[in-house]
Length: 140
Image (cartoon, rainbow, N blue to C red; front, side, top):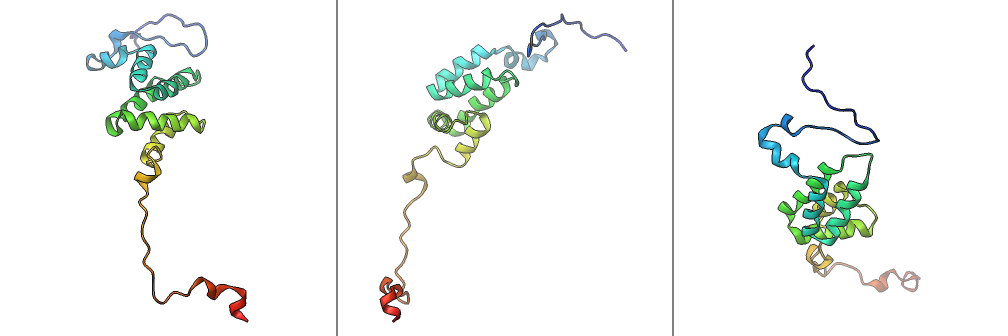
């Protein structure tokens, strides 16, 4: 076996070491964005988006860069306004995670109730019984 690269030892929990020159050239711009850069993008998308992104990045057990990138990419499909309201809903229900925001957007739970459910007029059937039919007085 041949040694390919040597990295210095990283001290501290959840720290990592990487070299940009080892990344493919087409991905260098993607990899050069830091967590602070992602937070700036999230702030541009909205206050609630920034709050969710900050919570995701503060979780030390998981590298939050990928979920925050995915969170920000939801604005391409759904728009900034819907992403902002979905993040606010996730914060209101104390579920600030990428998966939660995505499910809110897919289920259209971020939209006002009027725009999702249109009132449907039910036809009045001639063979249906009136409500008085089911009263106890009518049965005797």
